[in-house]
Length: 121
Image 1 (tube, rainbow, N blue to C red):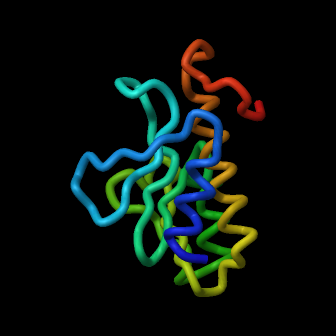
Image 2: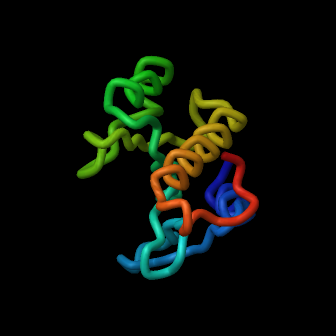
C-alpha cells in the first residue's frame, strides 16, 4: 500500500474530496459540503490517520493487533483516531477496511441532510 493508491481509494467514496488546509505534502480527505466537510483520512507518506472507533477503547484494538504499526494519532487520538503505517504488519486489506470504517463513522456523524447520496449506511 502507498499513499497514491490510498488517495485514489478514498476519493472514490461518495462525496469525498481532497483538502489541504495545512499545506502538507498530501491532502486530507473530507466528506460533506465544503464549509462543513469532515476529515475521514489524514494521508501521509508513511501511513494514514483514520477514525478507528467512537471511543479510545475501541480504537485501542488496533494498537493491540499491530503494535508499532498502529499508534494513537497526535492531538485527536483521545477521540478514537489512530495512525496506521504502510508497509508493515498491517495487511493492505485491513488498511482499506480501516478507511471504510473511518468513512462510515464520519458520515454517520454528519447531519442526515449533509450525508452524500450513495454512501452505505
